[in-house]
Length: 103
Image 1 (cartoon, rainbow, N blue to C red):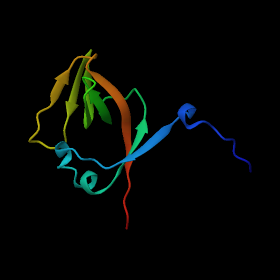
Image 2 (image 1 turned 90 degrees about the horizontal axis):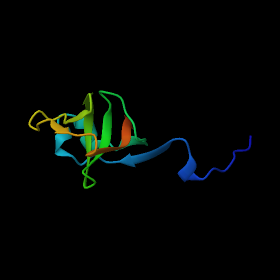
Image 3 (image 1 turned 90 degrees about the vertical axis):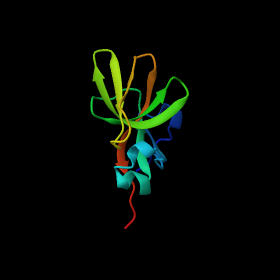
């Protein structure tokens, strides 16, 4: 079977492997020790764990909560407060789809 060569920039789904370095995820021990698998996308559903670019400056891994036009970014670590933003302050860069573990 022959595979067609496709430009990676035009691929329908792109994935990135990243190690979470966000103290907000300290409650999720697996995320601290295992690289995360992120599917690049610009939309997500309520409750999804996303990579969010906040104010074009800060990238963070948080759970997405939407209510109307308000966006809440929740950390897994209960010591961190939920942060509330307007729709123009948050750009979704990707969605967590897995953790890579070695056994």
